[in-house]
Image (cartoon, rainbow, N blue to C red):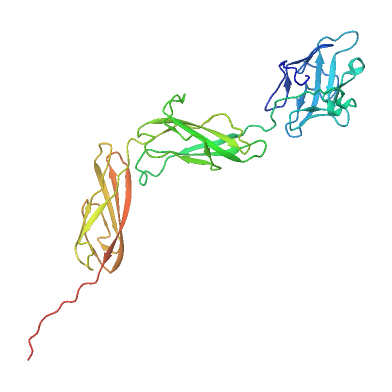
Length: 334
């Protein structure tokens, strides 16, 4: 329609297919239908569409007020130049309306009339198609090293224009309608394809839903994409700690180990498993074993504690063993 006419005749372009729909208006001829039903007069045998890669426009439209032997068909993409839409949204070239209408110029810049009449057909359609997030996955951390409920989200960035990711936003909620997210990252300027919830945002023994929005390098956003739901553990995993006496034992000296681990969620400790590098014994299932080390230098000691819900973690420390001091006996001189 003429630029500046201030009227929207309802012509749309589908963002994923480039197919036109709706109607344009001519005061002389009447309504022009952009997506008429076929059969079309000749190839290409489809209604008007724009190639999202080349921005060339082809296909058939039809004036509804046809008659007197004229079928009303108007062909786009006719001739060597054809029709196309430039980066400003301006249409170029001519369409062909048979001997009844003849050539229809879409832009004064292409017409021999030049500046005598400033007209053009324009669109606000953007050829920068929105990106998407695919292959959404959620994992939970190693709860032996992370003592709070958490989740790690990952995705793949996909863009039909080949643009890169410039930002993302992740929302996590215990309600699938996301009415009040427990965790909202906000728009994070980053090309990263993963996000971890910070401490204190999620709870144990709870089911959560999550979704993501991504932006391309032209700051065009995707729609929200939902990932798989997940459930956090009943409670925190055991926190492993132990002590020993003496602090620096000598070779073959009795060394008393004491479990100082904590368990959570109202559970109790159900089992222990110790390993002692070059120790005697070298393993133990006691809570507080007594051990001797058979050689000097640093020795690795590990403890695995299992709680009554079956949650278990392992911790490791190093014990430094020393040589025994030499024995001596005082002998009086002769």
